[in-house]
Each structure stands twice: as C-alpha cells, then as structure tokens.
Length: 189
Image (cartoon, rainbow, N blue to C red):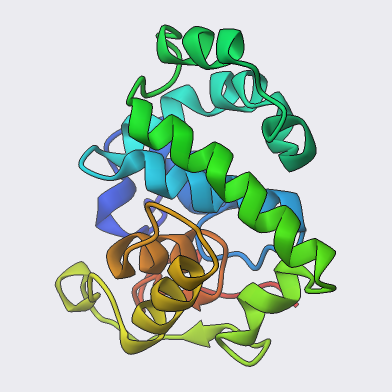
C-alpha cells in the first residue's frame, strides 16, 4: 500500500496534515472566514503556524467567533482577559491589531465594499495555481502579496506585511502552492 504524497511542510503531525488536506489552498469566499484567517496569520508572525493551529478554537471563542461588530465593542476588561488568556498568543500589539482590523473591516463594509470581493480582486477572482516541484521553490511573498499588504495597510489593517499576506493567500486558496506531486493539489470546482 503506497503512502499518500503530501507537501513536506505538513508531515509533522495529524493536526498539520488535516489542515493541509482540508483547508490550505482551498478557495474560501466567506467574509468572516477570510477575516479570521487574515488575523490568525498576523498572530502567527514570528511563530510557527502549528502554534496557531493548536489555538484556533480558543481564538474563535476568545474573539467572539471573529464577529467584527462584537470585536469593536470589546471593553478594557475584555482586553485584559485576552491578554491573560493562555489559549491565544498574548501579545498586546497583536490583540489590539485584530480589534483595529475589525474596525477597518467594518469601515470597508460601511463604504459598500464586500471583503470577499475585495480580497479576491487581487487575483481577479481566480486562484493562482503554481507549478512548484519542491517546497524550496515557493516564495515567501510575491508582487501580489506586496500589493495586498500595501492596500490593507492603507485601510488601517495591521500585521499584514507581504509575507503574512502571502501565507494568508495560500491558506484561503487565492494561490494553490501544493507541490506538483501532492495528492491535494487539485482545486475543487
């Protein structure tokens, strides 16, 4: 019996493999899910994605399901609770960035801009499917992630540098960076 071929980065454990097999590179179009992943990628800055995966459920609870309308109303008491919650990354700047990102998200919505449409506009609504043979070929950022980063920052978003936005693009399927011989490379129609 042959083993299923996967991208080498996910072979650490079942948590990573499940994320790789079921999330990474699959197109996501829901506003709140996109908002969640953008913030989680920002929380990951300087850490491993594995650390974030282990904390995803706690993040979801701590940030009220990533509901931006609830997040912008977080009290000082809630901020203190977040900063002492061992189930999330307790970095004050990252916590405040997520709340500020909720404000920016709501400002975009109030101006009539759909977040999903905005995010997907960076790839003209169609995932970019790359043809990499090894993980070493995958870039840390691209001109598109730079453009997205710059535009998000101009709208008030934080922790959205080009490397973070590229990881976000991979996570939500704007780009498919599964290597050529990965069994999960195909994008579902």
